[in-house]
Image (tube, rainbow, N blue to C red; front, side, top):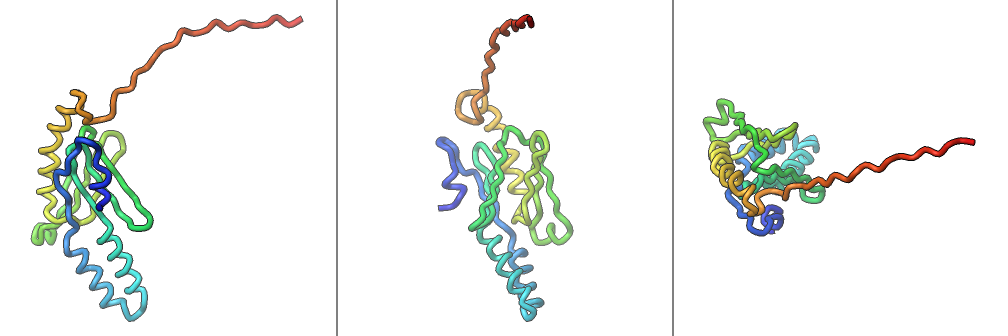
Length: 165
């Protein structure tokens, strides 16, 4: 079972999964062919292969999820209601072959960056379509976001000082 499927909350649905672009596999194979005879190329290939096989990126009805790592897992999640901007970085070759990077900026200093993904415009469009549904469901008690915190004010106690003798 994938990390994304295992981490879905009750009532949360998977909207779309982003796929890493095949050009990343091409880069790993080229490194193996060019530097494999030195030995360092084998290490780089194995490292890249583990990264490519263990990386998951998904958009759910409530959040963005990015997971990488097999033995050492690193995850990043961004709630849809806290997204401020989505940027696409796509050069000439990216436009030609259909790959690019997404930078999703959340409130505060949160930035969710992807590696090269296949069809980044499609993933950005899915985020744009899922945000209004998450925004409208956030305050209606549907579990779109964490419950609001309540603050209780307690009366201040008077301080007493003891006189020195």
